Image (tube, rainbow, N blue to C red):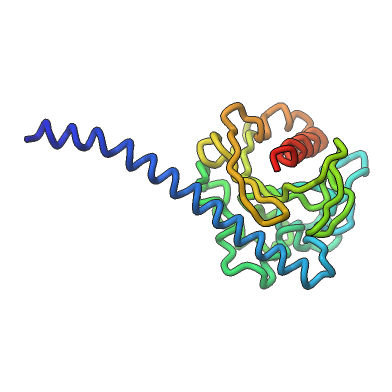
Length: 236
C-alpha cells in the first residue's frame, strides 16, 4: 500500500508542478492584459499618448547626456532626487494614479526573485529611492511616435508594437538578480492589447552581466533593451 501511495505521489507531483507553472504564466498574462487596459485608458485621457517619463536627462545613468527619461525603456515607476529636480512618476508609474484596479498587477506572479520587488509600491513618494515594477515598459524607446495606435517604427525601420515584457535581469556582482518563469519564457504585451508567450531558453530576452559592465552608466543596458524590443516587434 505504501509503495502504491509513493508511486502515485511520484506521478502526481510533477503534474502539479507543471500545472502551477501554467497557472502562473496565465496569471502573468492576465496582469499584462489589465495593465494594457490601464495604458489605453491613460491614452484616452491624454490625446492618445502612452505614459512616458519626464523630458529630463538621465543624469548619472547617462554621462553622455543624450537620452532622457521619456525615451528610456525600463521598469522604473518612480524616480527620486537627485536624478530629477523633483521626484516624480516615470512612464508606466503614471498608471498608479487611478488607471489600475490594484497596483499588485505591476508585479509578475511567476517571479523567481520576489525579494527584488518587496515594498516597491511603498517607495512611491520617496525622495531618495527608486521604485520598480516586474514588467519592462517601452515608453519612447526605439519608437518615432508616442500614440497607442501608432508608435511609429523601430531602429530597424519596422513597426514598433511591443510595449511590455517580463523582466529578466542579471546584474553585476552585488546587484540583485530579477527573473521570471525560471527565465524560460517571457510574456509580451503588444499595442493591440494581445499578450504573447515567447521562448527565452537561450536568454534572448534577458539582460546579462555584460550589459552592466559600465554601470551606473546605463548605455550598454539601454542598447540591450533596444535589441529586445526590436526582436519582440518581429514576433508580432
